[in-house]
Image (cartoon, rainbow, N blue to C red; front, side):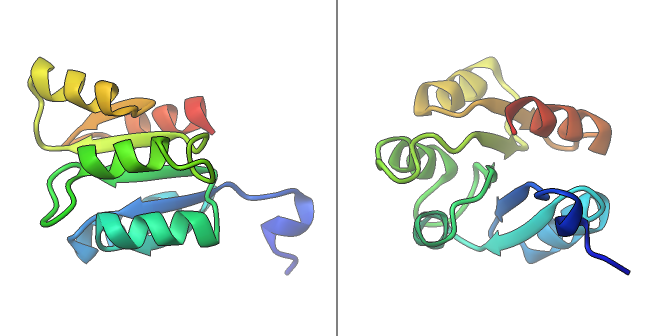
Length: 127
């Protein structure tokens, strides 16, 4: 069976989350339309995004070390990654948290728990 790539490029999404379980859930839900890769920290996200630039980044906000806001700022201030759309994913739903995400440079903000449909719509908007 020919891969989807032969029909056209499948969008590559880099999922950044310190919980591997979340990546597994997203993989199961998004595998049909996207190629997914995983980074477990803000630091590994930055090196991965420079080495193999994705079409979009799904970025968890609450991570140890470099959190999602700092990671997003760094992505948006790095020439090689500044144009990659970032969708922040967070359990923090206050307006203040969302504003902080957009101020850090994210292109969309999705609050957990989310429906896969709403996440898919946000991804499709930015890719």
